[in-house]
Length: 538
Image (cartoon, rainbow, N blue to C red; front, side, top):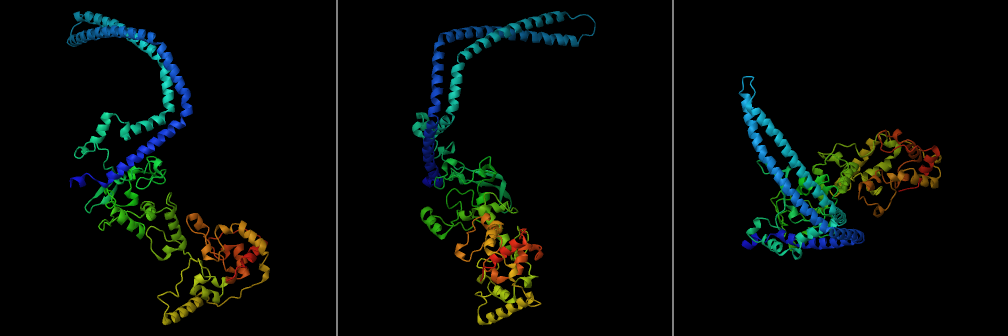
């Protein structure tokens, strides 16, 4: 039990980190020395010259010190005379003011002349004291001037060696080999069992967060985070390549540092990462593995197991950005949370909250287009095929396939599906198919149309990619914006040249709420672009 009480897991990490700090400090010291190696030569020479000049003034300095001792003695005597006589004058002042207070006639006070004579005498003693004090100050200034050149040279050298000195002092506190004998003994004793309650080096490091509370059923208490007992290098950029748990936290401009928007002293760790802040070992901190493979690795390496009764275990690393949503639940862009931002954009673009209620997301407009003029755009045959299986026409469409699923593919369901599809088509085409014109007058120069497609901005929102394997991966919101509009594969089989021409000329004439802007195309440009797009058939 005694061994267990003094063999905490975090102390092992702290010992390892101390060795790492020593190595880092030694490396940094050599780098700093190398950096100022050439620069310091002139300052060293200047200091040496100043010290030599100062040594030549030693006899003059000795004389000044003797003068200073004599002047200080004279000042001491004058000051004591002044203070002693001032005490007498203060007593006389009390007697004079008391007598004046109780005087009720016009007769002069006998004590008055005596009092003012002594006041005048005190002023003379004060002038003598001040004169002796000035003499002391002048000699001290003279002594200071004798060493001024040396002092300035030392200050200039110290500025050059500032970082070297800082690292050197830190190294002396870390490395026992560079400590004095007494400090070395003290550094060992401070961490001995029982004594280590006084001022240990290896200890629980914690931060109390008054503004971050957690519920303990009957009250809310401040969160206490002890994560830095193991994660010792998270605020130090020197450990960006160090292994866990010592590595630097990403994006220190945004997190943890005092100048960031999320300083450690105010936010701690668990306010973002969740987990059990008071835990001081791998399991009690409620780390959560990101995969079954990592879980198996942790079980073998750390004897990890799930703390079933802790309600908010730590977020897996791959979902860390989810913690940002606790506070930033009404922002469209969250700095430092690219995955979360992309997820929120996907929810809006794909229309998740059209069907699923998401409390923090405002109801968005329908993702699909207005269907009231559908008969102007497509025919009934195409509409039936699209409803049956949208992915057969456009593999990356946002529209889900409602039919042909595992729960509606038996023989009876298939008959019902066909009936429902036909019914939907009839509903969308109350007046039947409209006669659409395939007049070639709407088709211009397709080669020029391809050039226009690449330069007028179409590729900012649309792609034309028939192979699903060649689709650009959506890894951030910029990539998502480039697929804002539909993939234009097969558009020549979907609609007619006249509709496509009119759409390109002025999209809002067909649907006034469309996201597609007017490209301000001339008639010929619209025809050329129509000709190019019409070549893509399904």
